[in-house]
Amino acid sequence: MAKCQYCGEHAGILRRSCKDCRRLEEQARAYGGQVGFSELLDRLEETGVRPEKIMRFLKANPDGRGSVRDRLTANMTNELLQIMGINERQTPDDVQRIRKITEKPPRSNQGNPD
Image (cartoon, rainbow, N blue to C red; front, side, top):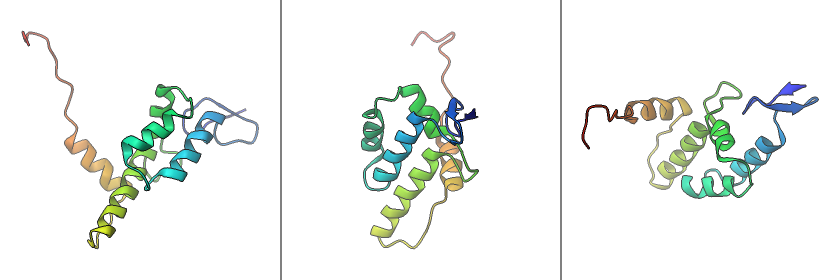
């Protein structure tokens, strides 16, 4: 049996993704770029797939072109830039670089009374 390219679970014979990830992929294709990210997450949750698996799906990089999350964010950003008349494009690599720069490391509460 092949493993799912998104979550790593069993995909089935001659399949590249499992049933859950195929449902998530359908939703991402149908709504990605047409709704905001929080609404897209709501649509993904409506599939009934466990939240942990949704996160694995979003973090997956099935074809080496960037994670699903970064590709969706780049598409949303590009649509917004186009609407605003700005002639620039964001790639999934650009999104990943910006995300890594802006992510804050988790704060340790050791020794802090807060």
